[in-house]
Amino acid sequence: MIATLMQTRRTENHPRVRTLAREEAYPADHILAQVGNTPLLRLRRLAPANPRVQVYAKAEWFNPGGSIKDRPALYIIEEAERQGVLTPEKIIIDATSGNTGIGYALIGAAKGYRVTLVMPANVTEERKQLARAYGATIIESDPLEGSDGAIRMVREIVAREPERYFYADQYNNPANWRAHYETTGPEIWAQTQGMVTHFVAGLGTTGTFVGAGRFLREVKPTVRLIGVQPADELQVIEGLKHLPTSIVPGIWDPELADEIMEVEAQEAWEMARRLAREEGWFVGLSAGANVVAALRVAERLSEGVVVTVLPDAGTKYISLGIWDDNR
Image 1 (cartoon, rainbow, N blue to C red):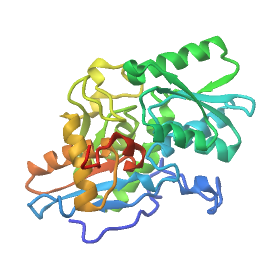
Image 2 (cartoon, one colour; image 1 turned 120 degrees about the vertical axis):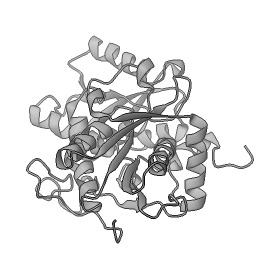
Image 3 (cartoon, helix red, strand yellow; image 1 turned 90 degrees about the vertical axis):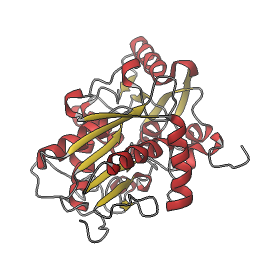
């Protein structure tokens, strides 16, 4: 097993891997050089009883925009710049439930681009205000239609004025999963010293699961890949989609998953509370769902190293009252 918790080190021995924090792109003191290379934390008080099974999680709130979505947001924008489809006069636009939009807004501020985000009206006020803090314009879509409604609205806006916008299209843009193939996956491989046996990740855009999963499957064909989604279309877990009843992302690869595990919203909320109070991890609700699933996987193992991701911190969801004992 892993003897000590390692800080992320760069993974240079895979021919298709690069790190986001590369000096040739951004100097070390640039905000965008801080994207990626997040710590790997080990569950301790909530750990499986079997000492031969360990559960780890990537602390993605260490990214400068506060979530794992900084990785694909930066990759999408960098690739658009390379292709010449994003130019200074164009506005970056996309549908988002919050985190990717905040990433776009931060990167847009750092690079000098205007950003417009379409969000369901019922996303938490914290997420809207964070995006606005970086200068983004927010357009609210029908709250009852969720992220799918935001996607449809963006498509309508871009269709009316295609020359005005760069449509980032995170759900269908291959730069999304490549960000995780080239950074998240290699970081997990290095941090576990190649001992990861199971990778568990929530399904929203599906970029994290597809990208990191593809990398880990390449370097270790025996690794098991488990996706996580809400138990049904009525279960709301911010950042996750119930794929059978949603617009399926174009980057999704169903052949990659060994298993899709379903989690109830109440389970995710309760786990988020427990992680704060028993591990000192103040994380968001998709993180809670991921840990629920990772512990289920761990319970059925005689030995192994289970790795999941903590996509963001709980700061974006305080207004939901989940951590308030009086609500």
